[in-house]
Length: 126
Length: 277
Image (cartoon, rainbow over all chains, first blue to last red):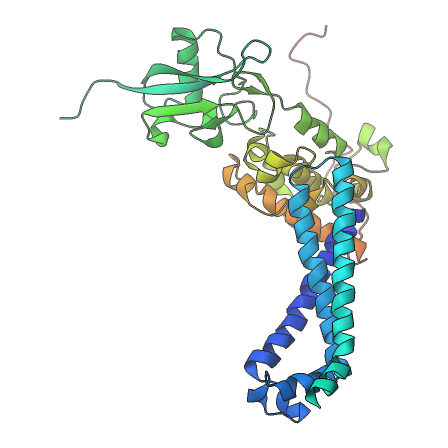
């Protein structure tokens, strides 16, 4: 039953990536936002725009969701590849625990980065 | 003027007897090809002429029984259903189906596949055992409901899909395309009520989740079944079930008696043609 749940979450994470990575690409490369934040759309990757987004709660939340979904989706895919190599039960456990620890550590780091960004942006931006 | 001499090809046959041979070896046998000759016919000629101890499994000679699955020119096929002429090569390489242990020569050990198949309970599961043991009428099913599983019921369990599956090749615990497609065949049958019981097996780590949709099983199936599609449909059903989105319908009921027809129950069986005992 556990694998069905994991696979369903994998699908869900894929859907979230589609939405939030799409949003990220639209903002960064198609210039769809900036005007709404007081920055011209064609300057989406300028420091001023980056700092402005870093102070927005909306963007902090989307970054955290994107980091979580991407980590889960990617690491679950890696787990599938590793399980195809037919590891024994002990090694299987090591893979599951190892990937979970790596995923959680990277997620914590990514979340901290997103949440610490407003202060950093203010400091660097002066 | 066309060359009237009979054409000959080389049958390169893989020989191996576990416990006696250290490793498999290839043997070459020249065989005269006649029009319409199948690989199975060629193997019989090889056995008659030069390799009497050559072993393989075959039965019906017409692509129905699924016994003669072999690796022919690098592709899993039925030997009885493959004409030598269609291969178009001077050397016909014949080996046992990969991904199985070898019993002898071209005979694969299909037991693991059939054990998994049995575990997935490939038959109608219903509560009305009395009706099933002593049927009064057929279960009602529309042509549309039949279409839901019809193509999967053409499977002859030859094992070609298992031999072609890259996941089975590396993960011996993976259920494999044949048992999974057959589980889906019954899960999608409107007369069946066994989804919940099969789900307990299918939702585990060795179920459809290991399939990464290489699609080789569907490519090689000699009966045109699409096991890869069955596995994707199974994943969808299991996910929808988890999310409480799967439509739950009671299994098809016993058909009502047709109006205006003097028909009572199942017609009696015709008289015996073979004496009893």
